Length: 392
Length: 221
Image 1 (cartoon, chains in turn yellow, purple):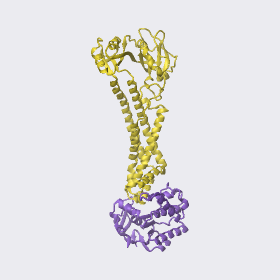
Image 2 (tube, chains in turn orange, blue; image 1 turned 45 degrees about the vertical axis):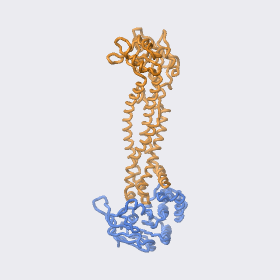
Image 3 (tube, rainbow over the protein chains, first blue to last red; image 1 turned 60 degrees about the vertical axis):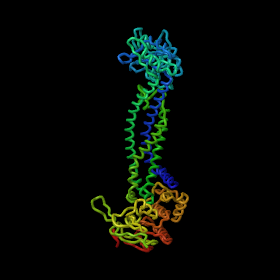
């Protein structure tokens, strides 16, 4: 055992025997692993935040449907749903898309009853929107504020046409950068203001329904079967269904990202194959000398494997550290835009990330695979021949 | 009683073209245990090739190398390594690992043999002291002069406490004084009962030999 440890120790020393080769190998590893770790960290973070948001959301989401396609649901449904046994609260909501500014910047406008808005106050700098006369009062997301150069007190020219007349809008609040990422391109306002913006009175895009614990299934089926809303049929999505749907979108992006990563992985192996050619003649000769001095082939391979292990784990550790810095300090610059729709390279809010054990462990395994694939071949070829031939 | 025997030993190389170079051709000889044998001959006569085959560093093209009664041509790689551990080989070009210190170059061959660390250090120090190099223990091999590297290579061969020392042109890189000292070392090793095989055309070394073989064009003269 002591003998094996000493041989392993010479493998560690070999890392420093060929500093240029070791450095290039580690840099190649970091170049491959770093974007992978940042990407997966972001993906997991976004998924976790989405899950958390859904868990704190309503138990059921009721939408309207005609010809099998989603349509607004009449507000007349609110008292009907509220009357169903097991329902504790029903909140109508309007969610729609608007375009702002000369560049038609995409934004999602959410309208909620004014009495529901205080729940958002912790995430907002400034005031909460309220109804009444005067301009529309809006709270806007950080990305929108930057793109449109808006701050609290800024005024927006009418960005919609309504039969009730166009109104100026006033920014009364801006989401904090550390608020959940969903606020980035969001405009939050009262239900009445949203109804006026979209010119859709007495309609909501969905109803948020909270139930007595354990009664969701019963309430859901009663809403779907028993609600008389004329030609509009109701469709209910439970929170659990939403939680199951959430990862799908992310998996699609993760899949594209992984495809990019596979390409990077192949390039990484090629780079390491080239790297292992650095000082190859010198290394071959070194192996020949060791064998001439009484080292066996398996002892030479053990030494090479330990050297590879040291290089790969050093590369993985550095990649991990830099990934954390990239995510924490540079807010996932460049890569975050890949996972978050409608955002550029630089993100104005704190992107969520999680460096979970599985991707971290995978990074260590991958780095080992990359290094060993790049070096074991040449090592084996040198170790398997007669010492004199390797020394030539 | 022969420690080494060769029978019809041949080693052919291809020189890049289709022609074959006969480095050794039908060499049959015997090296007695405890002898100081010199293999002499002009450059290209096959001295190095003979030592390489005796040292189990390469397999012959044809023929036999018998070491202590065992034919190395039939041995597995593991058995060849075991045979190498009983020998100390000094290469003409020293074959040191340039980025390792003199001490590390000497102790590396002892690691797979399971020699304890303290004993490795003691042997390295003793071997270098014997060759007047005790102050170069921690100097990297690439920083040593040719003569110093030669002595580290000899110290490495000695540290393994081998039964036989095979040295290829050991005095070719040394000045007259260093050559004399080195030959005295080989003479002492021989006096201790070890078998020493030198390939050289140094007359002083030939003068020490108990047996001399002369090679010409890969054949024994």
